[in-house]
Image 1 (tube, rainbow, N blue to C red):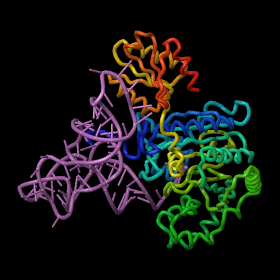
Image 2: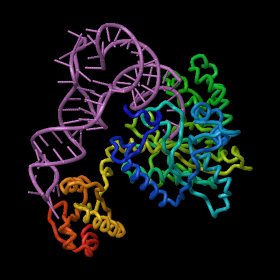
Image 3: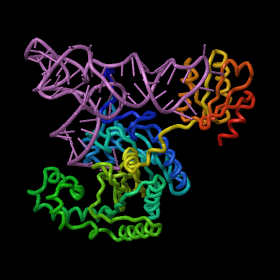
Image 4: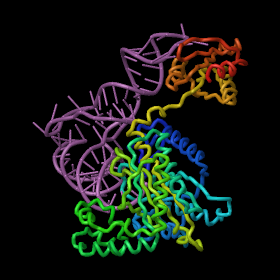
Length: 429
RNA sequence: GUGAUCGUAGCUCAGGCGGUUAGAGCGCCAGGUUGUGGCCCUGGAGGUCGGGGGUUCAAGUCCCCUCGGUCACCCCA
């Protein structure tokens, strides 16, 4: 490249007309529009928090021993403070909730967000160093309907987008005591096999044994076949809630698969957890993941637990799934109502005024700004997919009439400048 | 962080075992039609062959380093 500056590894630009769907402005706009609409349908309000947070918030919230905190953070020092580019949004949102006493608002709080997150991993398909997440959080209730609601929300979104082939996996991790008992049982079971485990799993045996459950190493999976299941250790309240959630989502026709090995990699999850997967987007097939995180609030400064449930979904992965299922094509180009063609200095000024007037009437107006031939400008009108071309030359300025050309039929008509807006508005809607 | 693989025009790619001014298609610009798009024809612009170093009379081609892309492990959205 002649240009010596490039975007940083694992990041990418989003620009109009990009060949890759994940880099194409039009696809992003379309998707963001659908997400905003869906969230509004469900009564979720947008929340925006800073990209930068104190390192301590993330370390405490997400968990010191998680991979995200221990090796994937973009953190830096400045003055006496340590900052991070946020690797996820749930902890920041809970921080904002506590900081602004949002529990004082009436009723349960429902939020959604969309924005960039950062993790220092080696990039691959569906995984970038700067990536985008959108998600929803319901804070202030432990009612199973909240859990079922966020599931329904995601399911509806996939349906509206037309995405098929998704699998919903669900599990419950129980309360803290249940998990501790299970953890001991699992460690007890796995310790005799320690010699056969990978180094990573051996470390986890003492650090975070539940993480061993989703290993991909075949030998370890074989060992795990006879391991105790968390299902046998779940506390009664969790079990009842879990049954309610299953009943609720079944009652609205949402299929799911129970997976007792599903544990999420962030420390704040407890009770209900879930994950949406899709085929065909590479090894990183998790479209969205989430669960209940009642214990997050006290971890970052609240006096007591605050019941909450939410999920995070990857925007890039969603776009990859759309692309894979051929759902990106029709969102490729902007359609113009009119394209104004001006030849000559007098015409240029007139065209500027006409464009201004038409734009005030909410028409989509395109116009070239250089001094190019009529032929060239018509070609642009054609490429821009415009319904009409309005031709303004010396003749038109003198006659006080523009030539309006229907780009599909090729038919032309002379229209007084004063009647232009009305003429176009009538026929373009 | 580990590994594999790739890097030639804006894009997709050709360039046998090193050998003249590095090519094509698409796209872009202009003209063919002195004021008319799509199709067609003609022409043009655009490349220090990712970057640096080395071997050689000679490197896009061979060697080393480096920077990126892609994919997988790992992890997760």
